[in-house]
Image (cartoon, rainbow, N blue to C red; front, side, top):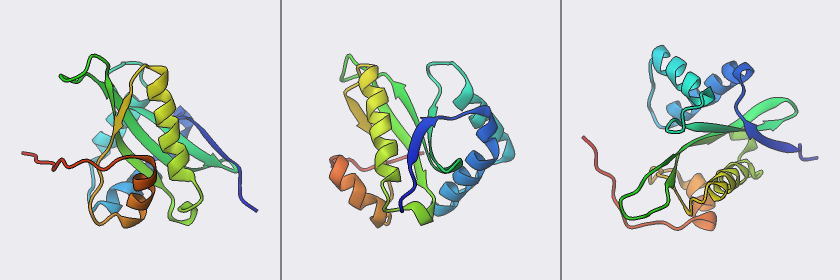
Length: 148
């Protein structure tokens, strides 16, 4: 029997499970951040500054099973803001059950509520499992990312 999934905003009491999920996400991308970045990021996610990231979590049976971090920003080619979905993660044992889709659709709903027609995100080419979902609910673009 499938567990009911609830998508909701991050809460201050979620810190331990949020950190566990975000650590697993960073490890998937062979990355890590300092303890200070965890502290600052969590504080920003709970803050009320409109330029900071927001966080939604997926909950099953009282346990966090997924997260997404996203933000709204201006775009030189549009009057409306655009939404950047930076991080999306679901526990491996929940993949294929709709957690990722539910989180992305919740970000879409948040963007719609703000009058923001565009939501975009990046992934690495080797992330084949996630790309199967992304190909169904988004459009791949021809852009290539560069950075300093």
